[in-house]
Length: 111
Image (cartoon, rainbow, N blue to C red; front, side, top):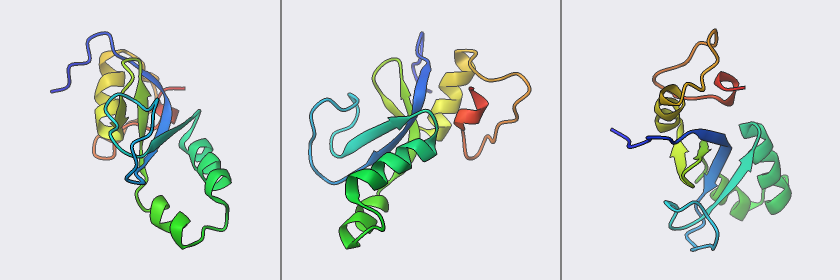
């Protein structure tokens, strides 16, 4: 069980693990970097701008490390399933928006 007392979801985020320790990342990210956006496609667009599109071999390799998730108010990157539990406990879910318990949270479930 996640200790998420007072914790809530801030925004969509993708983690890309390049194996390098970067400064100013969410506190639970040891290597790689997190790109935030309103929706996950915004994160992917920023990634494409950073590495260049179409992806070269290095870009494809980095893209294959992508994990979609969310940033929380406690400076953590969480996957979609963890995010769903946090959003539910924080009463952030839109009342008439169906959720997928297996896949987890989508930003559309929030806003």
